[in-house]
Amino acid sequence: MVKVLFVCLGNICRSPLAEAIFNQKVKESGLSNYFHSDSCGTSDYHIGELPDERTIQCAADKGIKINHRGRQINRVDIREFDYLIAMDAANKTNIERLIVSSNLNHDQVYLIREFQPNPSQMEVPDPYYGGMDAFEDVYDILDDAINYFLKFLKEEHKTYV
Image (cartoon, one colour):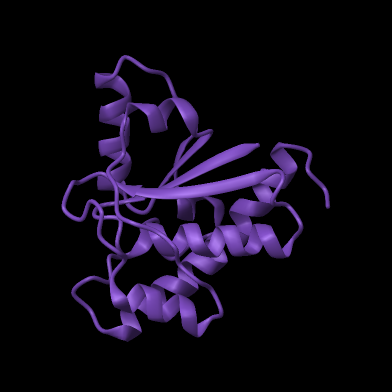
């Protein structure tokens, strides 16, 4: 099974939404035996907390249920997950620093928007200080980027269903 970890700062907005979208698409595609995802944050701000209520609402409006509690990335994640997918450059850098400081190797660290052809920008903006429209924008970005990422994974791992 290919394991994907989506990472943002606090693990209450972007990354749990990415996890939920990814897992829903995997399930709908009949690929649950091939791919699985989880999410976490690089900070310890929201450990054990539910995602932001706007994240939960945004997903629910699209028919996606989020079942997640905030957690912080750790060395075990680096060993166990095949792909570490950051929402922005700062969190990608934090992941890479953890890899180095843990004396581990991991060559599958990406920004989620790297998989989109010609994205308008490389980062998924943090909607935390915005309104519901900011969460909807993040949903749209993640939904599109995850379609391309899932296509990449199916091709990379020769999974055709």
